[in-house]
Length: 143
Image 1 (spheres, rainbow, N blue to C red):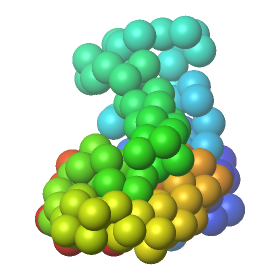
Image 2: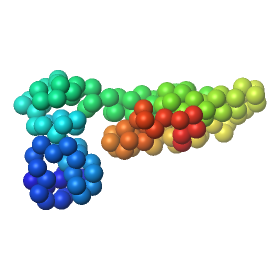
Image 3: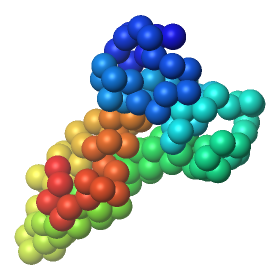
Image 4: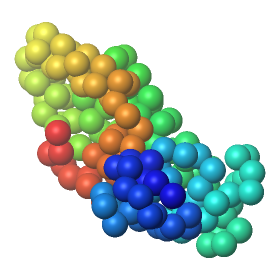
């Protein structure tokens, strides 16, 4: 079997990670558990029958969080709501303070930045977004 990420041959069907790239060899496919690599019986399966991991929440949480962050950035990005949502509360405070301390004129700077960030969120691949903005990588000043 070939890894769907790097194309390395010889990857076992139920492998958790590819030895070539270190990513789940089934990351691009929806019919494998991303926790243990077990092939799912059905695309609509809710949990993995081997490890008990919730399959639906893992598959959909990255996409919905990415879209919500993009929409928040478009609507309320000037005051940094999207930064608070992604866990970068330090940058959220900077955006909010820039607007409040300048009586709203700071939004002339923060709003275009938030617009560009929103476009990046909405066009970013789900796996890249999940890696960059996961719970483990949260920090107050994460860009």
